[in-house]
Image (cartoon, rainbow, N blue to C red):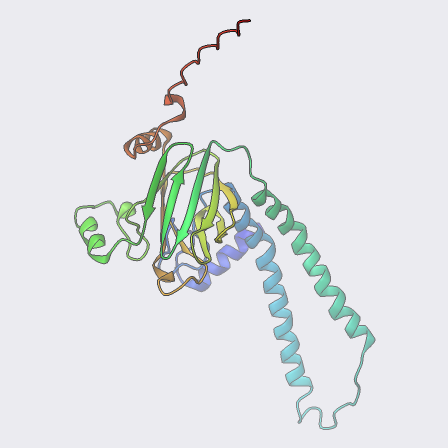
Length: 287
């Protein structure tokens, strides 16, 4: 059994049935990440489960054992006459070298992952995300699509769910948006993120995406969703009184459905863009 499987089994037993793999939204009783929808997020989960978590557990157990040893060995009853010393070269070398070695091991796995996150591959679509106080603007500049998404009011959540028996697509309070963003499955999407006012952060946990939106600056990231579904996120930078009411709702759909949505929004597909009219050649100058 692999280390990740051992830790998963131990956590499941400790949680007494709490949810482990989640959908694209917060789940009651869950103790792990949301179910990944991109390869980058799967790599993040693997790094956490196979490297970071075992190291954290080992360090925590060692520190706990050390504290218990000190409590038992050096309490007043067991050690009535305390020793008087101020330095121990061996101990100081150990507690300097060992943490550095641990950090080197973590860096050997985390740095390549960060590089893969930051290297944006050739993309089929470009999505521009603009944070506002307190809503989001989404734009596909190459497709001519521009939408505004804010929090779906509670009464609209109830109204939408009243006629929607599909549990997966039911509206969620404080997470559903007035205008969901659609993205195509299996396509590299480059995301340009900025702000019109204060600092926000566009974060979708299932995508492994979290990027600051800063006024006067454009940050970029990317994702490639590999399964259809509804995925939620929220603003992850304290941005003011309605910070908790800036939900992100993303629907990953087939290419055909995405193209239909683009046309319904008044956009134009790249293949459907009319060719520019040919310009007549200017007459040769006469002498």
